[in-house]
Length: 241
Image (cartoon, rainbow, N blue to C red):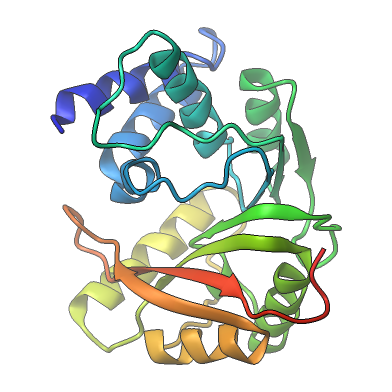
């Protein structure tokens, strides 16, 4: 799969933002092409088809914009043969603290539901896919537990939680991850937030405590960071949507 195809896809996703919002367009293209997680989500076909998508910490809605662009490519017959067809969620619900980013998400995808609010308080509803990229570590441990409990309760049977975390392994890569996250948070107007990170094994155990069995996939290709993607499914039992 050539990088050229994905760059073209990212360019179309970025073009969904209004032309007058040059920042949104430049950020979208840069983030989609510079962060390996977005290409991986498409290549691995992780987002569930015909099921609600919940994006917690959605920012300006990059994942939804990418999926919309992917649908257009697929409909034109321009899609890698080795990749599964891009998922068509039955609905998209995004939650983010930043009203500005939520406004940008709405401008790009007005048919989705975008909520400016705190993940600790907003209702998650039901979802076949829950995505949380680089957000859990901004919560204190007790709040992390509560959010994970609610994520598990929100998952439909056969659903998946896709959670990216930093691996607190003491390496320089982990220190770079924390420094970058704190800088981005400050630039978004939330100050230099304190972060609450754990080793990957502790993250997996936290998911297991709340009925989510997870496995880890490194997700830092081409970056200096210590990011890991946790793919978690709900253990059978009560509490599912």
